[in-house]
Length: 218
Image (cartoon, rainbow, N blue to C red; front, side, top):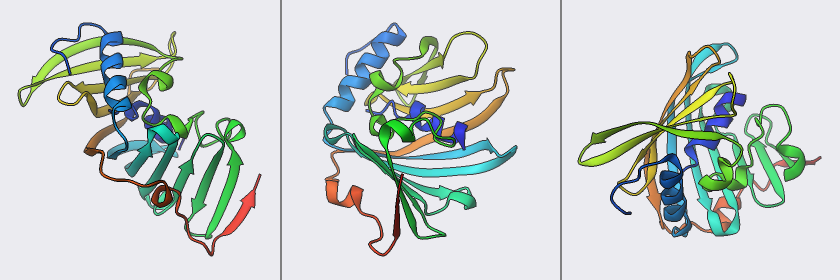
């Protein structure tokens, strides 16, 4: 699931001025739009290579940026369905539906564990923070539905995996994400839909997990 969760990094560019010219301009405007939102939610769905096979991916993201609080609920693949991750500035809580267990891990330890892909889940909607370690360039501009669509490409430099993100200037938010392997093969292709801001999400609702679950602290 490393690439799947890494995607959560890319799509976290969530969040208006007429013509962004550089990747830095676009990231700044997306970041500004996000900072003006009390809460953000969206769905990520598509396909990705998981455990050497192409699988359906579907998860919902809800976040309250000012609280550095994020909740990720998995709908697919089947192996992750109904699992939930809740993260804040200090702790990552990973709820496993099949075992009814909650694993609590300090954030500084959780980000380095296998399966998390180095993702800081508290930054799911903080574009500048998520991309600070990446080289990002603008590789294309098109129009869709009267809005401009900017294609960004992010990499760690060199010949590693690359992530492409499509950003619309209608609200300065992502609409699509692709992850490419070192050889240029598309290993994930995901759409970002159901994007909402200021929907009245609460801290209590985002933190909520089954009260009867066994808690394992690491």
